[in-house]
Amino acid sequence: MAGRVISREGEQTVAPTDVRRYAAQARSTETFGRVLCSARTQHFVADGPVQNGCPGEALSPGELFLGGVASCGVELVQVIAKEQNVQVQAVSATIEGVMDRSQPVHSELTLFNTVRLQFQLKGVTDEQGARLIETFKRR
Image (cartoon, rainbow, N blue to C red; front, side, top):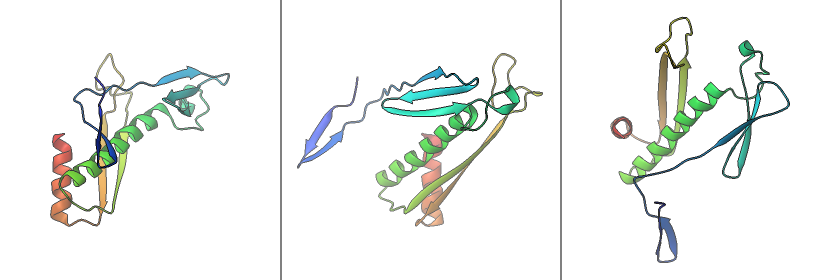
């Protein structure tokens, strides 16, 4: 079920729903290891890493995955700040992942061995920042 549009005093908002569906597509290109990706009306290129014989010029699938996690975190911290009436000037995140193929986490899946996500918040007190991040961790 999609969210429904609610109008208040000329404002349109989308009512939240518990179920959200996302879709993306990817297809090979004429260049080995280069992939054209699409979601809704947005398009971007991903390259496999040079270690796989791919171009390695565009963002790799691993970088795109980590970037998706970081962007989700930034957006969600902004939403939480709004819900808590905290005026945050800026939110940024840095994420790093390590994949050690010589020491796999799971024998049948390729997974990151470690992932570290750090937030930087501007315009909030240490207490407000800690509360925002703790709320984020529980979502």
